[in-house]
Amino acid sequence: MSKSELEKILTESLNELESSGDIVISTTTPNVVIDKLVQAVSNVYPITLTELELSAVKNAVHVTYSGFKLDDWDFQTHIGLTKDELAVVFKKLGNSV
Image 1 (tube, rainbow, N blue to C red):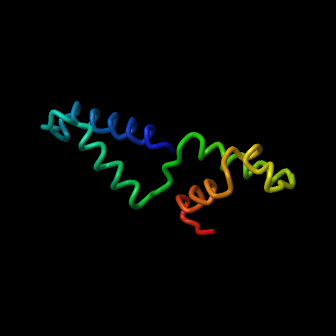
Image 2: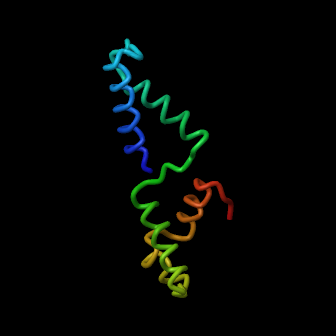
């Protein structure tokens, strides 16, 4: 899930809670509340990948599943990220390289 998707879901949920009378949002800048919630979620669930990162993960799984062998020189062409960039994504997923 991307950060923008998480922000959208949290915004909709807060609006529903406010509409139903379960909470009252008394700030004129609700984005501050959303940003705090996104940060809190990211601290315990740090899988907020960009579209490009998610696409690279899907490509890597597909290449691995299909048994296709990648040379270093064409890694980025097939995966969409360099090995160093994919290492950052791997760390976001809770793994280290």
